[in-house]
Image (spheres, rainbow, N blue to C red):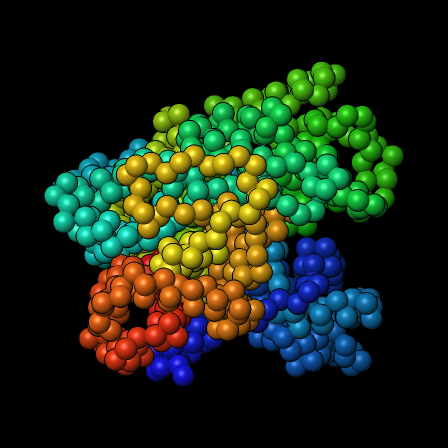
Length: 636
């Protein structure tokens, strides 16, 4: 029988559940935007808001109460477009009413929860993202405020009347740094060693120590790059040779901390080991013209290296930003083996694509050169010293990864205005000036007071008015969650044959035994990993969902994989702690799971759950209760 602690954990878990998306959600960009542009925009966007109704952003629309997510029949918008009364029908007057198909599309959109393309607005952008790097005049240092990031943010806080957040205590900082930098919690001995350390500053010493653990760093950041580079160990396209892994190349690149500009050049102008990214997926049968391999290449290069969404622009001029059909096809033509016919909305236009770089002011591609030479030229332009978009995009991704939200939001819409242009430009120049060293960039951010401060949870999505107040709470990724569970319970499975093409290097002699196991990033995806957000990687993924879904809650509550793992772990823990009292067992679990000892109330609840003589079942219940706690599942 579950104890009160278990019930409390489950209640907290389920209370945060959000609705699971439907199998085929509305395509906002292609289905909804054209209707709103044609029928609603004239009267309800860009400064003209008849009836106080604005469609500029999702936030503005919801604020008007014209749509009730999930309830189309009760929404005023639906009532107006279906009205037969000339006085209330929308659009008004002599304008053509919506067709039955258009009405059905809007109804489904509302019932699907009013999905909206991240960063999209009907209001024309007044901000133009710069291309070239810009050197920032960093405010002067003063006692207690030496770090350049903190000096920039100090001026930002003052301008925005924000009180800087307090610093984390040492156990909380250690847990955050371990999870963010190597993807695991500290062992009990590592935590104790950090708390007793005399180094000054001890936090900077810990950051450097973690980043020198090359094996743990590569194991953790492999998931980030597998997502971004569409690299998976099995799945669509591998059987017939239409897709190729880059795992061995990628893993070694992370182990060696390959400079990011060289990393990018080897992906764009590839060798035999790195060509899988450029190769894309060759789908079986007929596909939409925008899904051919050449356009996949354009979409992937644009998204990964520039935060540019070329998916819409691969079908037509984009509805959601300024990219044109010619931009996507121009980039795609660089890798094409033969003349590339241009299609608009899957229909041939009769035109042939001309090679074109997204930022032609940096240079051009010789269309008459062999493909290998064209790719060399493209790689040089992508990493050109004057291409500030390349460095800004990467530092924004790293900031998002460490701080919970990008300086530009979303990270794949780098045309949006950053909340601090000075901070973004400073980091981009710092990154380039330091040889595009990703570890050095991570260290620079992680040694700032900004990173080491308490998380400031957002009550709701702030929309256009976002003001940085400190780091945000981050959910553990599927890999971090399961690695932490495996480490706590000593239940990591052996790597399946063929899951990793080359054996990862041996653990360094300094690696604690608790961390010597095959990490989740190196094994095939199972249903629990998929439920927790590990993507199938058929498309570029740069951010994963940060809300708990119904399926995740069910899998965590009583899914067979987690249940079996915790039962096996309970047996392992009992075997390793044969003479431990219930009080000692409770402390053992809390320190390893949460990097702290239990409170008096938690200790009493845990002892009640374990009973006078702990059993495999009672220890498994305690493990389940602890890993369900938000404190375990969040990086604070």
